[in-house]
Length: 200
Picture: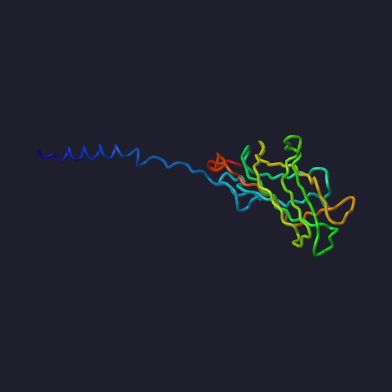
């Protein structure tokens, strides 16, 4: 049976109304990404928190000694309560070596805050006999977790600093280029941009 012009108009209007909510629904707000902080100018999440942050690792203005007081490493601008991977990359030398071609040494770096069986956790144990490759490159990588303020803190202590000099007190030197790096491992709300118009 042929459909009248008025019936066709009614069917067309009904179809239009049925699709209207879908066609006019607002797009999901993806937020407005915040700029990266100075601590990580090229490696941050849309939330403006660092995905990876590095800092120079210089324990003091002078040489290091065996059983010297711990020195802290603190890396901030990270997400709060986040699991991270911490990497320590050291460049070491020994002032008594005085550019000698061959040298004996032992350098042990520990974390006195992490003790197992009464022994501090050893992070780096670097040693050589008649070594000729200087500065010594040594590294460690392991887990960490930021605090409620988004700061990762790790205490480091030189347990052993020993070389061929035979001096009662041996000196070790951390050189420029020694670095500590924290990289966020897990995902969380910090990967999302805040709503547009909100403040950091």
